Image (cartoon, rainbow, N blue to C red):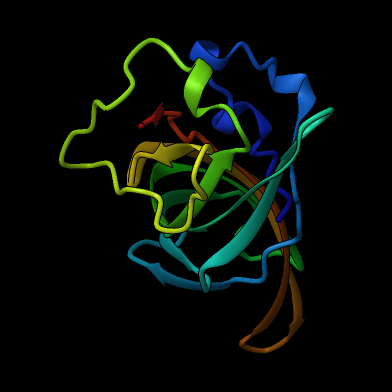
Length: 178
């Protein structure tokens, strides 16, 4: 599934507009585990492996990278449960785990203002910022809503194909440290 991270890695303290930030996007393979607790109702757990994203800013260059892991749990309602094609809708919660944050603005440490030096328990320091670089950190988790719509297609008895789309709300929180 594609994910646009550019608005999540934007810092108003640094005066960087989100449309100037490029975060590598990719399709994320996942495994969906689904349990039916009634004929039309099910719950689904979406799992994947941590995904690496490279971050750059127009006119500045590479800021580094981070990884995220977005497990999501939804409740789904299926229409036309006995048919060959069964559309569904769902809603639930997402817990995104942010890890291996290695982000820094090259040469910006001397000009940074605002909450420089401020960190709280949920913020992990950047491990590989060079001298003169302004390290950036991302909060290590985010909890948000998730919604989905899709269709199950019966291929044979007990076998289904599936196509769906999900929207996952991921809260943004970044800080710079000196």
